[in-house]
Length: 131
Image (cartoon, rainbow, N blue to C red; front, side, top):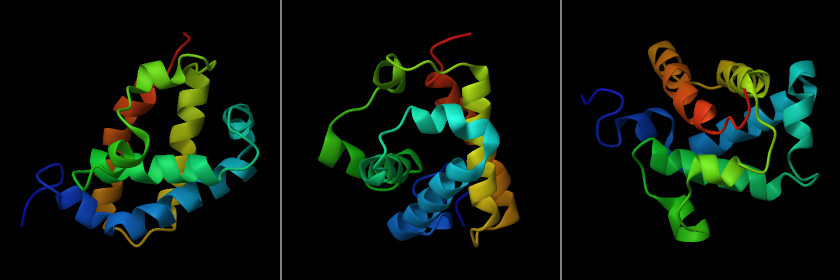
């Protein structure tokens, strides 16, 4: 059995595209109720439909599955895509907290949840635009 991070093992562990859509929905649900996430929620459009789609498709490719984000939206460079936003360490940490909360509701192996949180720090940090 491949280890997480090899081939599409992480994508499969997350339940593929549908599993990632479920994770992303739980993530944005957490963002709407988590007090520390008010700042990052305000950075999003009121209608989160496209934001949900973009994050789910990004995660598909990032976890070794099909590169659906690129097919639909083109190439993404996280620092450039977020440079117009005021993403500081507190915003990054609020984003990660929402993801941690979302993972609680997922039927993922505990070691995969831990792996995912460790790995997600890097793209979250890439989105940081301020100290």
